[in-house]
Length: 365
Image 1 (tube, rainbow, N blue to C red):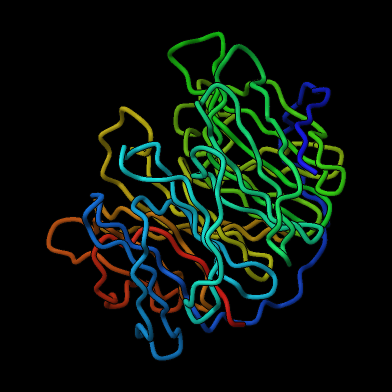
Image 2: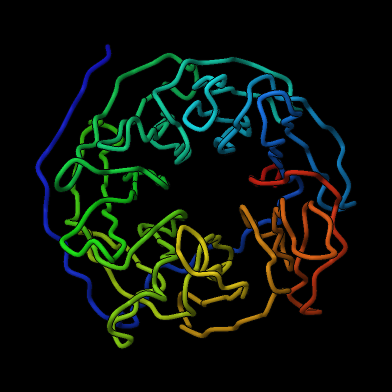
């Protein structure tokens, strides 16, 4: 049965990070498959899903996607690949969700709420499709992850005023976490708010007030916690209060972590958080500085690596001792494609050429 639900809200407090033991994660098996969504940028172009065999670092299969504007890709717990399409940026496009086998074979095409750009999370045997709708509030469509049947709809109200554009989603067994852009009292600053859902009751469990100098496009689960990368952190008015990363713990406690300014994309493996940094994202900044960093979530140590100036990336993924980066624009003199940064050699590996490479997901561990 479909339903629309709302709930009460709570004001959040962000604390300075104090080291805590947390939960050590088991060593992650190295992914053997990398899924790459490439966009042509036009309705008549060739948008594709490419399947990369990680050990050989070669494309094994490329599937042409039938709809323009693919916006996200995710792999569910049984290895199926989900791709969302958004009509928000292209009048001839359609809002759709497609489910594919790990081979790329199409299994189902599903209707979607408007603007499913924030992505998909999986929890409690369900798929949660996050949609920006009209940008004034959000909506999450809930599907049975086995049968793909619709279960319900969760309306995500704006935390204040009439603006809440969902930008990111992640899920664990007990929580679904969303982030989105919103409005605040100072029109010269960026604001975002965080919302959590109960995946079994399909209700909004908690929502923060608008948080200044926050802009989150990547959330990753880590045990009972969630890690949120803040690409607006370089704009913090008080450097001593800069929050490059927010760590959302049980009880909706938010800890502030300083790593390096403006992390955009995040991934976690073996208790290490990896981040890609881009100060120009969603900003008036013209900075061409790009970087990678790592933060050990239990030892609290930081390592940083410079990337070539202007090296834009649409996603990252951890592949053992390499970090994969999808780059539709790798900067002057570099081809678009899937790059890998070797953590031991501290250098970029020759890319797999792939025009329009934008989004990544891993599978086949």
